[in-house]
Length: 275
Image 1 (cartoon, rainbow, N blue to C red):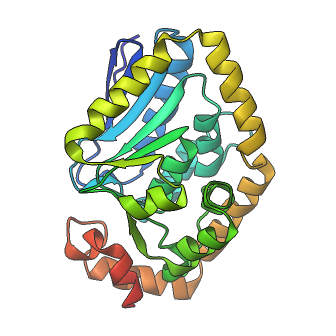
Image 2: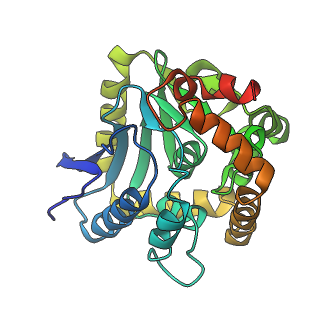
């Protein structure tokens, strides 16, 4: 397997595929990233040597900040190529990520918001940098809706009340808070984070594959939301993203530096509260 992608650097080592997201300038979700994620899922399904996939970022400030709001049509079209006729959204693609044969682990060393945070929830496990991890769902504060699984996943990960606070509050949360409410499996200092994840990933990669796959399948059966509910949420996102009031709030944020390496993007939770 070549593992060659334009926005993801991949290296297979000791049964673990290290997939480093590298989509300058700030790792926004666009059509190229969606196409690469689909290709990586296909390739990892085909290569039995890839027992675990670890996602991390090449950018110290951003894991995946959110979608590229200027290219919604393009990435939606790319997502539609991921499977059957119902796979027309990021939520459907993320469902495929959750059901992938390899175990998936996200290492959050920067900002993950919106659909970037929803990518995290779709992975099997999440580990966060105490110094740099920031997770948030700013959609409601902007006037849109989290349409790639946050509603369904956060209720299951954190409980109803915490899901309400994360989604309705539209605030950023740090690694300690993410660990406390169940979004992150564990929050660790940078000096320990990668070695901890590497030990865990390589340990899982040595276990009998049939046992790992069956355990993952049955945990998913108990914990993943119904596909239909994720599709409903995707539809709500499409509706609200076209609302004039949402467009106006997004336009204001863009004028202030959203989607750039700016203070607005770095402190998006704060910026949304100031709209």
